[in-house]
Image (cartoon, rainbow, N blue to C red; front, side, top):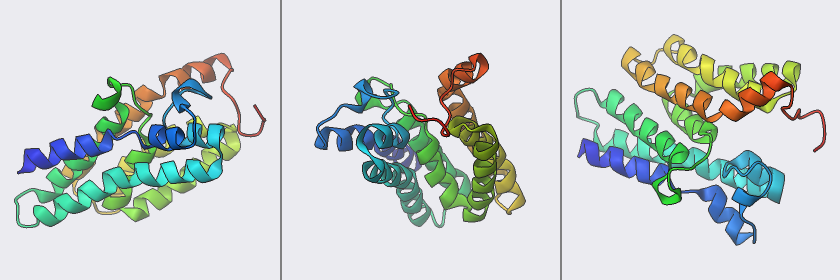
Length: 198
């Protein structure tokens, strides 16, 4: 049952809602903007409302599988570990979706859903770090990387089990991996700032 839940979490996480929403609006977001299927590019290409809709869907596709897993595994030993593993599977699904030949998004919104389930307090603290980093740097990517990096620490400080925090570390690694192009642009001074219009 546990491994079935993890597999289903991956398949749900792999659902490319940004692509679906784009298609309904008559656009393929993979061919416009940054080419990413996440909420940021959907917002850039199709507007803030559809970007927000994509964000909500991407958050829920990790949050809901974890909620289901928590309910089903309520009496299992190490349930916290396995619930977090379902969240990790959803993030992996989003970043490497089987439906799109393993070419997916950057995982930030789906990771947000995972961390929201585990600790809203930790997410609130990380959000402050995100806003501060974006404000001072001018780059959303810097904010995303900063928030992802500090979240496991805030999870631990907010009382999450150490095993849960450990499961979350690969999520941080995935987010950094999927931001490699942003990091390269930052290094070259070519990353687009939110302060400047495209």
